[in-house]
Image 1 (cartoon, helix red, strand yellow):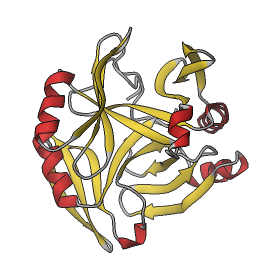
Image 2 (image 1 turned 90 degrees about the horizontal axis):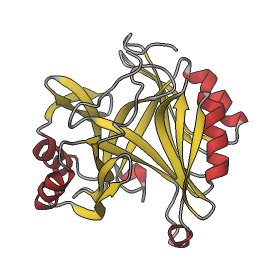
Image 3 (image 1 turned 90 degrees about the vertical axis):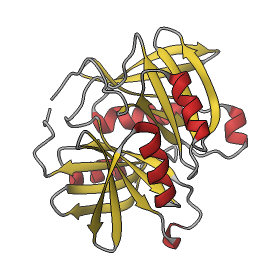
Image 4 (image 1 turned 180 degrees about the horizontal axis):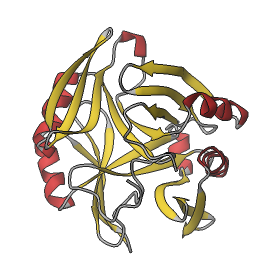
Length: 266
């Protein structure tokens, strides 16, 4: 699969970086993933940067506000899930225990969104696309590929997302842990793992994985570009080889070289 024209409802459709150092982050990701970018003005000396692969939108980033930095909010990736009606889903989410952080509101020339903090503490967004459906390349290298929730309470998280999106849950025993798959019509949508004491004070969060052709080579590139490796290249049997990365501005993301034959190397 390469270019897509729509995002199925209740699937992840967009990834957006809020960076404490937008310029450094833009250079890092453009070099690492061979992306180009378009800077759209959103204020005085402030831009919303659309990143592209071969001229097609894949993600976005922007400079964190000074007030957020003063609150010591770390750089982070925000993940969006496609819905038919943001306002209706926001009401449903709050009834299920979520808190609205921002919105619902229109994004001129693009769609309508709301940002939520779910009962387990992870932040995510809902997206009702109009002119912009989200990521337009899927199942190929150097674009978002997988999404995974690290939860302080896996049982609570399973209940919330299953009720909100009608996702089915499959429990997959893995070495030393229990891994949950959120599925839609039998197809995996996202993963869920429970955070143990070893995670320390890291908050619950959604992690984005970018598909890559060679995890080990990309890890070397990350180091050369000023990023850090949080989890070294590691094999997941029958799934692929992954690593967890921190970019130069402090945002955490993952890369994975799939062994399942589902990613086009392009």
